Structure formats: structure tokens, C-alpha cells
Length: 292
Ligand SMILES: C[S@@+](CC[C@H](N)C(=O)[O-])C[C@H]1O[C@@H](n2cnc3c(N)ncnc32)[C@H](O)[C@@H]1O
Image 1 (cartoon, rainbow, N blue to C red):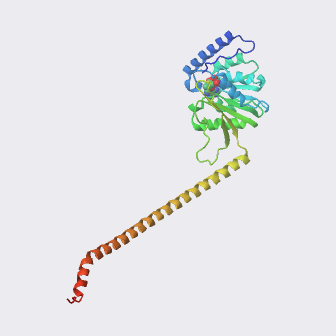
Image 2 (image 1 turned 60 degrees about the vertical axis):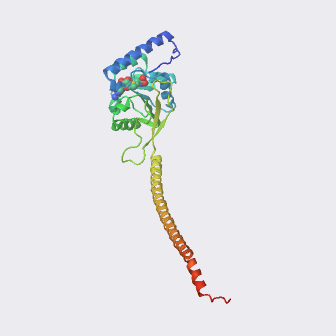
């Protein structure tokens, strides 16, 4: 969804741009009504979000850039605007009406109508070397975790060593689960951008990169160390609690001993005081009478 007004593109008047935006909004709403799950939004992404996505791509890395779910093309536009040659851009879009629009709007860019969740099948014969990046605006949150992880694994299979997988989300956390149940350490790195507040709704851009073998081993070793440290800390906590219990018991027993000792002494003093007049009398009776 967008509220801001772009400066006119070269060769386009502000009025022409306004009409294009209005038409894109209408196309998007139509697509959303026809297939809300796949369209995932009621409005195209704004230019600030599109630029944030395009900035994640290292254009010096070799190979094509594959965009998944381009819709009406705001991210496509931002990638081209950054200097990506149209021949390096491959768009994978499910919706045939969006595909026709993209072909008209971006001459020289290759548009493939197909399913991004079957990336290998859809791109068979289209991509022949490692890709520079996979840039996705697919509405991932509508799909189960397994589909999202498979999509990421498929994307990692086609990018080169300097490649990156870029995905935006309106959510607070990574749209691709970072920890897989039963696995000790994540097999990829995930970095999030600051929120793009000037998009409605605000969104974040995530960049995913596969971890090299060495990095994965280090991550596993670090994970193991953290586990051992946690177990050690748990044992230490138990010992501290046991010691506290013992000290508390000893203090209680000592306090009871002091109290009973004090009570015994107090009773003796009380007895001595009570006996004092009788003892005095006995002493006097035993004294010889004084002569007159
Ligand atoms: C949220 S829109 C994003 C559109 C555009 N990139 C933007 O940012 O405004 C999602 C797009 O993904 C497309 N899409 C959804 N599922 C797809 C799939 N399995 N394969 C290819 N494209 C898909 C939709 O048709 C739609 O154009």
C-alpha cells in the first residue's frame, strides 16, 4: 500500500504516473478479490520498501536476479532503477494478467508465468548458471513452515556463493523459521532491516544466506558449548539452593538452642530470687542469741 508520491520517472509525466498508480491499485484489488491467499496484499508495495529490497542485492555479483511474485512491478522498477540491466532480470509470477502487464511495462525483462514454490520446474531451461539473488515478495505467511523452508532451500540451490535471498514481511519475526525442530543450529544466516516506516503497513526486509560448511560447524560447536554452559549453570544453581537450605536449617537450630539455654538460665534466676527470703530466715534462726 502506498501513500507517498514518487518523482516522475524519466520520460513520464507526474499525471501519467498518477494514472499508472491508480490502475495498479485497481489491478491489485481485483487480483486480491480473485485470489486473496496468493496476492497477499490489497495494494502494491511502496517505493521505500521496494528500494530497501533492491539495496540488498549486490549487483556486482555475477548471474541473473530472480524476482518472485513481482505483481505490478514496484520491486522490478527499483531493481532497474538501481542499475540492474533488464536482461539480467527474470520475473516469476503466477497471475497471467500481472505477467502480461509486466511484459508490456518492462521491455527486455524475462517474464516466466509459473509457480515459485516449484522453482526448479518453473525455471528449468531459463536459468543456466548461479544467480546473483532471489528477491521475493511472495506472501509466505499463508504457507506452512515446510513450504517456506523448501522455497529457501530451492533458492539457495540456484544462487552463487555471493548470492542472497531477499524477502519482505509485515510481521515482527523472520517469515522463514530460523530454528527447525530437531536441528541444533540454523543452516542459514538471517538479517533483518530496520522497519520501513514509510510503507503502509510498515515492513521489514530479511536477507538470507546459506552458511558455509565451516560456519555451520562453528555454529554447531557454539550451540554445544552454550548447551554445556546452561547445564553447568543449572547444576550450580541447584548447589547454591541446597547450601542456602542447609544454612537456613543450621541458623534455625542455633536460634532454638540459644532460646532454650536462655529460658533455663532465666528459670534458675527466678528460683533463686524466690528462695532468698526463706534462706535469710533460716540463716537468722541458726544464729546464737545475743546476750543482754
Ligand atoms: C504481496 S504481492 C507482491 C507484489 C509486488 N512484488 C509488490 O511488492 O507490490 C504477491 C505477488 O506474488 C504472486 N504470487 C503468489 N503466489 C505465487 C506463486 N506461487 N508463484 C509466483 N507468484 C506468486 C502474486 O500473484 C502477487 O503478484
